Image (cartoon, rainbow, N blue to C red; front, side):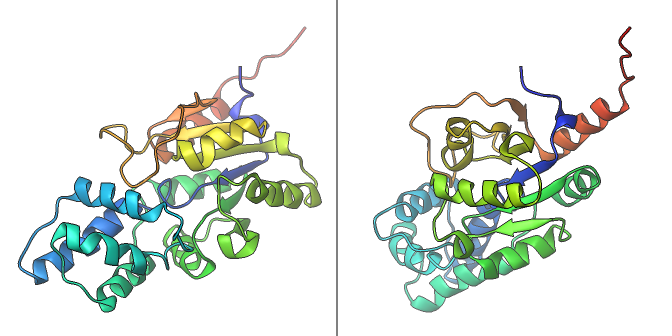
Length: 244
């Protein structure tokens, strides 16, 4: 059985997909471009093409890589060609919205834990994401900071080192994420306690996130950040058992 939710000092977070709705951000921008061109796009089809184009040997850092990705998927979606459209998709990251429950849930959790961001996005994009979420983070690690992307264990090790310098340990961390591939599987292999936020619980497939080779059963499982924050509040409000 996992520890109580109150036994952690740090919550580490995947940001894009867990707190920031990148799928809506990408499909929204593509839909705007399509409308201007007098056509339409199917959101799920666009995400499938995005996922295929994103994870290749040519992959660059996110979201800068969206310029390249657009050039790959545009012809398949019947969208206009041109670097300016790829740059528009990349730049749209600065205005991507958090999930409706993210900001409030993070504010609630920040009262009890030290919140640490772990994102494969570049620092410039994370700055916008953090602002959208109300700047709730005690610390933030990006692909620019670590030099690697999740699920590379080296990303996690840099966070472990930071927590140790802060007076904690890996056992004090609950890792919270929606991506089975980037976060839940590797966190289990590294001996972390994890919490899966199943953002796509009402949808089929993995959307814009790469499908894992195998599913990892998480220690905690919620469908939203609000559910996690509510669960913490319930545990905190429960009567304390006094031993004889």
